[in-house]
Length: 539
Ligand code: ADA
Image (cartoon, rainbow, N blue to C red; front, top):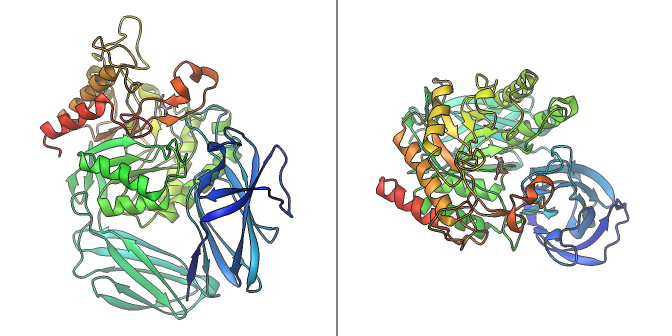
């Protein structure tokens, strides 16, 4: 049977700068895991290699799980590499033989410098450290590798269960559901693939997020998976949840807080989600990277819809059209789709935020990523956030056409400055232009506002201007049945880089378009938009 140790706590640490640490790892300091080492003195803002390590009492076959790290890492067990975590924020599992049952050294060599998936200047701070839980599970030699559960017919409660077991196991597997329904099936060559209806099932929805559990066991091993029975589908301009149109109303959200960087404690994540759910919102775009396991679990339980996204921000040619880059992206989307397969809250699977989709050559990239997700998940709604608008040549490929327009902000001219008059006409213009047979989602829209800067003239950067702009947007979205929803840019002010062209637009080194500031203190826009939702019967 499995036993799991949580390895969070105080680990030994050293910051190594440009010099790659090699075993035996020497450490001089301590750090918190989860935690971002570059958030605090004496390593504040430094970039380079670091090593974190601790002792672990274990032996035999193990699975090490790390719920996201930054920006990349390599894992060592007693000084021997057992795997690498090449993608920032990606939750990763490593299965390896831990050897004799005794005390071993687990070390992670981190590198918080920019990696292959970023252009050098991007608009969120890439923290170094381990962002989420670290656990070590003892595995039986013959163990369950994966159980994927999908809804095939939400009206009848028909689900498909696909399971894989190591070592080509053939024999009986037992399934026990929370409803009391049981089923014994035969596995051949480590595989089971069966479709059947679950008696007494309940549907998962935003209003009633009912979850089921499946206890899947083979002799000597057992896992419990949580899942929801629901269907997302599109029909014309609508996204349907269980056959009914659902309008996505919510925010882009960075995993970021001034006190913890990207290693936010689950309690703070939960408090962000409660705040938005309690105020009439139902949607989070996980911008711009894989989300922590805890966030998805909370959204499953709370009935919050999630846009899942792999990392790849504003990538341009030649990188965008590079073969190595594409193969890394393909690996990312496949890993993420498999890992989060059973979460009913995921409404959209996405990649490559604001890529250069005006080029014909980019079609191949978008098509390959689309096909790779589809090969794992035949029901997923697939999209990406585009800022090429009328020039985007890939809208025929995706399931949901998502656009990041910034009317009243980035499109302002000296004549239009400080007026939100452009917001509704621009959204209408886009809506008229885009395909009518696919949902049109506003995946970003917003304006910078500094908390405390009040100005009746509604000048740029004032709380008043942002409030008016976002109210115009929500008015449009709620008035237009043919708009599938909006994710405001963004939930809370977030640390960014003060570099290059951003020095002009990133006061304090923050992206200040949060409807809340970085400590979640409300700006006028929050009060105005939540009041608007209340008036429109959304809360
Ligand atoms: C882009 C990008 C966001 C953020 C935003 C902004 O659309 O996707 O990450 O940078 O613009 O604030 O300008």
